[in-house]
Image (tube, rainbow, N blue to C red; front, top):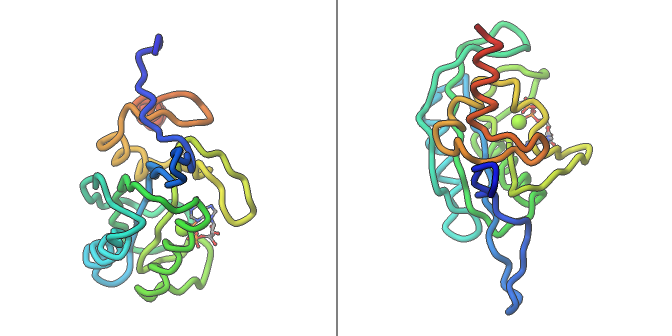
Length: 178
Ligand code: ADP
Ligand code: MG
């Protein structure tokens, strides 16, 4: 690559000659600010790594963060993970929503407190703007609680819309925030 960036994003749903679907590298962001936050995240990660279609490759450190938007609520714990999956993006969203439900998430208000939240941030280089599934996650570039842990595990990964690396985005956000 002439610009020095590593295109480590896997292609979407690429199928090998023998018909086996190759896996996609996706990034999932997790957050919790109700109950035993660390336990909720650990439980969600155990569920996510299902030993079949989703495998966690890398996990960022956990960070405590101030809530963005919504009502007054407690501090969050956040992390991001890179997974490899043979699922499609909608299937991965369903898996994430099943885990949220299994861990007792109740949606009372927008941006309200939550036992556990799993968002798909990136899915290979996929761009998707369905009503119930937007990828890349539309607010990921404005959120320090996403970019900081993501810069820790995948700094050279390229955002498929902007063409800039995660490290560049994190540094731009930090520059704007100070
Ligand atoms: P938040 O936007 O705070 O994460 P929710 O977790 O309640 O809110 O999700 C609201 C809706 O966002 C879900 O019903 C889901 O269909 C939709 N959604 C759209 N894009 C995504 C994505 N990339 N990852 C997860 N949910 C998404
Ligand atoms: Mg969510």
